[in-house]
Image (cartoon, rainbow, N blue to C red; front, side, top):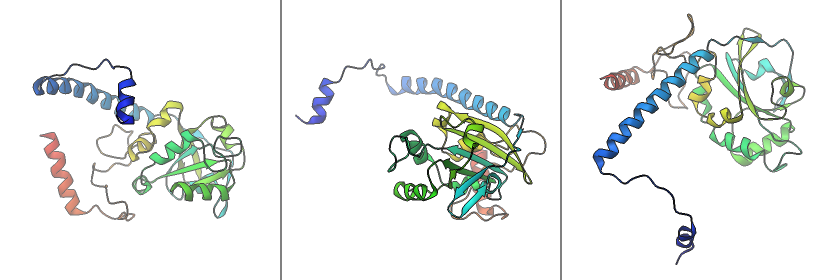
Length: 255
């Protein structure tokens, strides 16, 4: 008897659902799909409300240590219009130091998708911690993480509610003026990591034509801006062949 079979025999019995034929299973799935579509539409409505949240002016100057020295909060935007800052716990006193960051923050970092797609929507993601910059570089190399990651030097974490717990703060800039637009923490952080979860948290959203957004917000047709992560070119028109493919797919989905 294998170790696996012993474990299965010793595990408590589960109260499993009924076993049914294909027709009954498909009917149950259709009923569940209706609930899932309602859930998706409710999420879209919440994102639309986020895009109408008031903005809070950031009047205080903040400084961070990066690979190339001191940088400001404005520098963290990397020239883009939107910025998401995640406060990760990697510092003396945190479980795992100095080899690892917090286990929860590390799990979240493992979920971060390729940032080229987020950047293509004029949005930057940055991580911040209280560990020195050299330690952050060492951790990133060990764990295979590539997101921009800076060292906190002042009260940024206390001012934005992430001195005691992790969280995502969302900002937008108008020239050099910076505004805080949203904040996600606790279980909300669990869903973060995809380009869609990040964009849905931003004031401009996914910037696609189907979204319910305030007048004047940037929007383009859905799918057409998608690209291979190594093929984005700023300001380039969508590839015409991909436009044809995406339009056909969208029409087929409508039909």
